Image 1 (tube, rainbow, N blue to C red):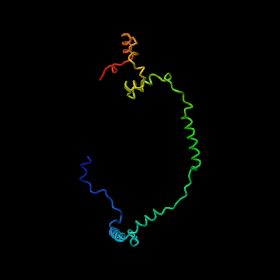
Image 2: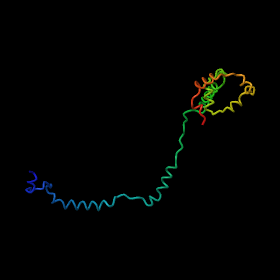
Image 3: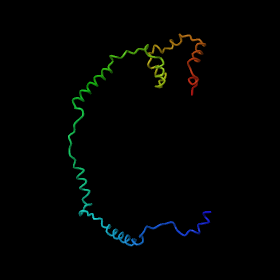
Length: 165
């Protein structure tokens, strides 16, 4: 219904302020005069300003005043504290507090892990043993039953240990 009445509208809906067209010419002319006057900003630079600017800045930056530095710690105090710390460190690192290690105090699992982690082979272990321990007679004297070997293999070895790559 509203669309049917659109052809009957006579007014645009826009309004102009009173006396707008009477003052329009004066406003336009004053705007043109203002633009002509604003082309000259009124600021003037000294002669050769940009040629000497770099030297002036470098002179101001490089001329630093020496300031007195007050240390937080005096050298004597620092040396005293360092010597006390070194004495305490030496005290804890000396062998007074250490127990003597024996084969009985070593944990078997620790030794086994060390040998595995360091990739120590049987020849290197044999080099550490005296020759009397490696004689063939020492190995012949032991009589090991088959059931004992089978039980040891089942209890202590994994399949990965038995399979040779």
